[in-house]
Image 1 (tube, rainbow, N blue to C red):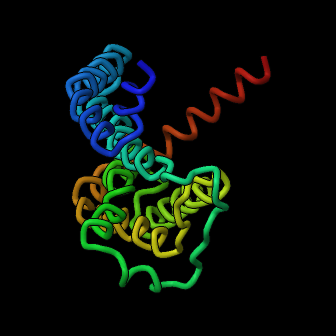
Image 2: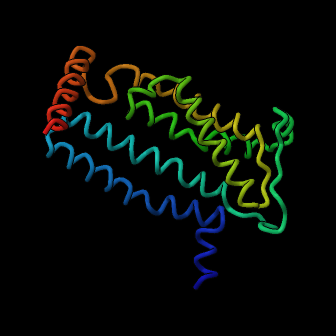
Image 3: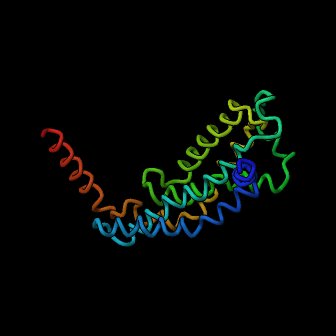
Length: 202
């Protein structure tokens, strides 16, 4: 039984199959979240937008990160390896590796600006993706997964998120991600702050 589960969650093929298999469940989660938000008084458009963004960034990122953190054949036996010279590994990568690295945080690039107004810009998405990539590469090194922690992976991961954000900018560069228009956002923030202060005084 353990070997069977290892075949599912411990191989690239298994992770891909699981990702495809849970797509209907993911769609159901989006629908349930949106329905709950509408029931709580949110606008239908914002409820669907926020729910899709939250689920989409998780669904589109976790499988890639999981595959990156799969241990190699000598995991635990060899120390972590670092490659800190930019572009040195890039020219040795296959086209498939390059595309895969570009897709790791592409979902973040598409959905984070939709959900969080504070991150609705391509440079901020680049910084976020680079930070997440550094964490993943650090985990590879610390956990001794028999993988190379490369600065080129960080560059490609961030570039993929930035390109995805740039390509989807018409989705998030218009209405604010919190569902408020520019004219109402300031008053809404002030009202929310005042309510918080009143509750705090109590």
